[in-house]
Structure formats: C-alpha cells, structure tokens
Image 1 (cartoon, rainbow, N blue to C red):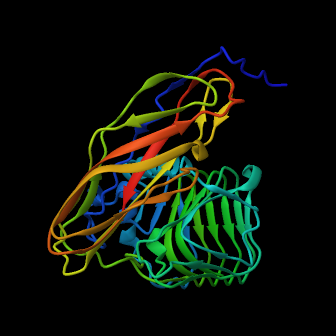
Image 2: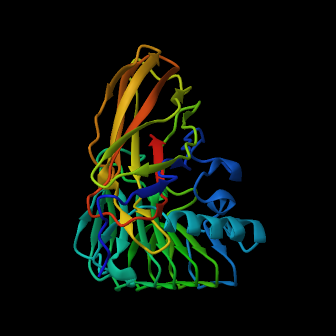
Image 3: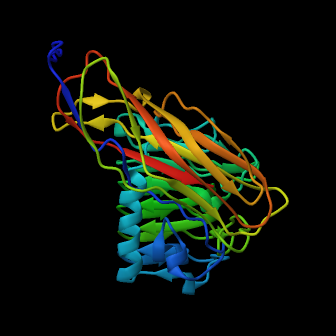
Length: 358
C-alpha cells in the first residue's frame, strides 16, 4: 500500500517544465533533402529502407529501385525516428484496431499488446491536410487479408505513422496507407495496394503484384516560407505542499510565420504535458496542470484567440491565429499552474511539456 503524505511532508517537483520540442514546418512537401524531414530524417527520402535485405516479388508496379536504401545513414535516422515516435504521449486503445474511425492523434495499444487490423478502418483528417495519426505498439503488428486503411477528409499517407517494436506482417489483397516503421522485419502480402513507406531495421519482404502509389507519398502542398515555434527551456525545482497550487511563469514563447499567406493567414499552437514520474514509478498526471497566455504581442494583422487550458493530460489548443496578412508573429509568456494532489507521494518528479505549431 502506498504511503500517504502527512501534512508536514513536502513534495519536491523537478523539471516539470522542460520543453524539448520545437516544431518546424518550413519544408517543401516533396524535397529530396534529408534535412527537411523533421520526423524520418534521411529515411524519409526513400520508399523502402531496410537494415537487412530487401526482397521484392514479381509484377510490382509504382516502385523505383532508386527509392530503396539499406545504407547506414538512413537506417540510423530510422532508429532515431522509432525512438522519438514511440515516446509520443498517446491514448490507450484496444490492440485490435479494426472496424473503427480514428481522428488525428496518437494511439498506443492497451498493455503494449500487438496491433491487429482484422477489418477496415478509417482515418478522418477533419479537413486538415497536416493532421497526424501515430499508432504505437512495442510488440508486433498484423493485418487480415483484404482489409483497407481508408483516408478521408484530407488525411494524408505521409502523416500516418505505424510505429511497431516487433515485426509487421500484412495479409494479401489489402489497401494500406502510411509510414510503416518496424524495429524488426516487415512482410507485405501479395496483391496489396500500398500508399506509403516501408521502413524496417531488419529485412523487408514485398510480395508479388504489389501496386505502389508512387513516390513521394501523398502529402500537403506546403507554401513557401516556414512556420516555427520557439519556447525557451525552463528547468525548475520547487518544494510544494500537498493540496497547494503554484504558479510558474516561463520565458517568452514565439511563433514566426514567414509563409507570406494572406489575407487569411492562420496557425494553431497546442501543448501537452506528459505524466510526471519519480524514480519509484509514482505519477502526477497532466490533468494537474493549467495554462494561461500572458502579455500576448502580435504582428501582421493577426486575430489571435488565446485559450485558458485547465488540463494538459491531452494535447490542448493554446492559441488560434487567423486573418493575418503576409508574414506575421506572436509572442507570449506561458503561465503554468500546478495543483498538487493531497494524496501525492513525496519524491523528485520529472516530466516534459511539449509545444507545437501547425
């Protein structure tokens, strides 16, 4: 049974505001420059990457052998992408994904079980071509023959990530979409229609009569220029009483939009806080955090709607900007309120807050 805090005990909460992610979307959608892919790195320049052998069946269409690679640079970047994507805060879902419609977000298999797709699924982009779907399991992934992964409402294959710790095996005659990343091997069943990438640290085997949809895979047409966010790191150590709230002001956060859009330039900032944990496995959830925008300064004729967020357990919208003309920017001070539960176990807690702009 966990020990309860006595009124005189104090919680030491450390590094709850360590900001690690600066999200940039300044890349052209079909560039062959590895430095422009913020997720896959050099591996994103290829349709198939393998840390082992690549075996191709007969009668394959839509695949240029020049879009395959087994070189160390691509494999190394794939390994980094697997680690980064696997660490994405995610909603727990049943391991059998079949028969459902999924909205943009990150999903992890319940209990770390192997993913299965036993019937058709739909990924709904909500009319945003930049919407991302991340499916994470430390185990394997298998699909039943003949299933379809259907993208609707501007969902794009380039923004779908299947992040799998074990082997990926797909049944014959399937319609598959997305980036299939495996820490092991990937086997694609015969007569499959494939819009995506196959990226494996081990061998890749592609069956006969596979119809690839061409390369690069479907994605947004991104305007010239870029959209970026900068949030200074804040590493703080505080002594907190159970049941009390503490207010912490960070340094300036800045969004810069150089895409030159107008007269209705728009972007959105979201933030999420991971569970804080101590060395003994005790947790303090993101629902204990609130976020307020302070001292907002805007340029370029933007209309910005700041939001007051009362929980950061899930990714929440912080700012929505519209109606800018040409290049624009916004800066503000994030003000974070942490409410420590009365029953919180004493310890040194660490966690991550992530901002992104899109």
